Image (cartoon, rainbow, N blue to C red; front, side, top):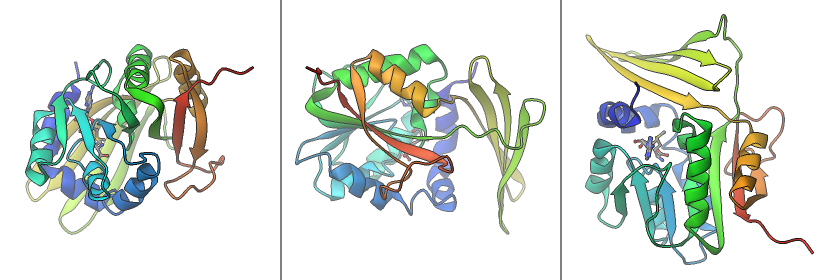
Length: 247
Ligand SMILES: C[S@@+](CC[C@H](N)C(=O)[O-])C[C@H]1O[C@@H](n2cnc3c(N)ncnc32)[C@H](O)[C@@H]1O
């Protein structure tokens, strides 16, 4: 049984280096700028806050950010970076912090770490319950892409430089929509294995799940700069608000 907690505990010591190499640190300010616009001076909650890659720059813009994460080691990284962010160890599939936020957000495919449809709906339900009256939920998730899969599997060389080789091995189960993958990171004479089970969703399924918990799509973009979401988009940034009664 794959555990996200164990995987991210293993990932934590190299998470910052990894996210720097794949360009995710470079876009964190852009992500924070997008999210800030929804806060209106109110607080925000990040689901799967990790090391604060986005939460720290969002805090730097004057937003009070809180977070939830399942991995002790990721939470320790966050605590090392800042004392301004309150974070809980918990499961984003089922939470109730007893307070409301103007913004709840889940970025960098963290929604996909919930490996069943039921857990994903439960997460959306918990998130909806944590929004204040005018609050929004923002989800950034990649568009499913099966290019290169042969016989339900694919191995991708993600990065090679003079010190590192990243190879990702994936198996696709179209019945559960699971991608079971292991990132292999070779450096010097060592290799780290970071296994993970993800569940992909198309944007339309995400909308339907959101509708089930009383949310409706307000905006959808192809990137953090509000580029259009098109058939060429690799990801989407979707903004949900409480469903408004139509007269
Ligand atoms: C892809 S990382 C993203 C971290 C951070 N949001 C970022 O953008 O860099 C996913 C994060 O979700 C956390 N996570 C995985 N499964 C979780 C769960 N069921 N509940 C809470 N956090 C979870 C991991 O520990 C990890 O920190």
